[in-house]
Length: 329
Ligand SMILES: Nc1ncnc2c1ncn2[C@@H]1O[C@H](COP(=O)(O)OP(=O)(O)O)[C@@H](O)[C@H]1O
Ligand SMILES: [Mg+2]
Image (cartoon, rainbow, N blue to C red; front, side):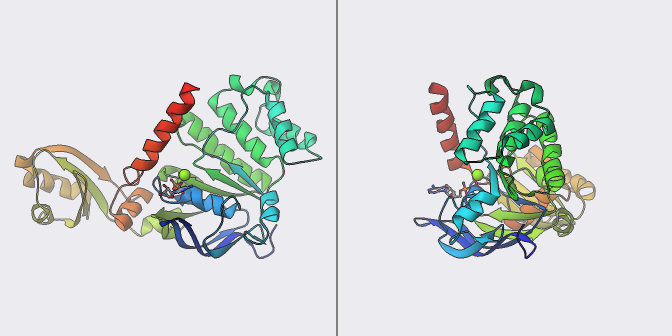
């Protein structure tokens, strides 16, 4: 374990892809043994941060040390001490669970891996399926297998890139328990990225909110939530409405627009809702949504947009075609 108490520290960490600034002067310290979450929309720079911290991608400017080693000067030492659970599935479906572990051990040139592999299979309750093809596993079992692979070489830090993306709620909950378990039982520092604020809230001791490559807020989930005491009301109307009209509604302290949607910051949603209905009677309220203080409202407050609707178009577009290509194979 690294001596100074930090599993990860970064100063002015910056990554450019040609002219695009994907990560913009990020400072961070992640304590040994903690669960740290990077919360942000698609395209915010989350995966890029993992790539530069794990030595997979060069740093453009700034510095970072991971598990006590400088990422730029000592990438091999860093790689030996970190595990990675990618957003994409990395299992070989044609191999059994045990063979996947064997392959991972080969790739990493691990000598003493069998006993540990046994223990991991036990821990993840996969022992009785070890000889079955991974292709026959359930989604939950596959996720467990991916985490087992990432833990095989006893990393100090495990990076999980959107670990629960696309999972149904039951599997997501199970995975939350597993992530907490891995952190507690194995003493592994967990660095995870997510665009689900409930996930950051449920799992992370500390959270950094990232938008356009910048950390816009860092703190414990409760510290972050206490920053915003007001509620947000999101409205879509069938007739165009002016900012002035919305601002004039009693109890509305701030008005922002995102596409066709208006986001109003209000003292108390319960008090202001009737006022909104009264004021907008003739404009036809098509949709209305109340957001109580949460990491989502912190994000709205700082960036003026919702986490689940912001950015991402290009990214989703690309992902869509990548999946299409995969499906055709
Ligand atoms: N290899 C790459 N080449 C060029 N641009 C990239 C590359 N990888 C990511 N980007 C861009 O960098 C930005 C951050 O991407 P990424 O780190 O994947 O975001 P996130 O993981 O938060 O969705 C996006 O604008 C993305 O399009
Ligand atoms: Mg990503």
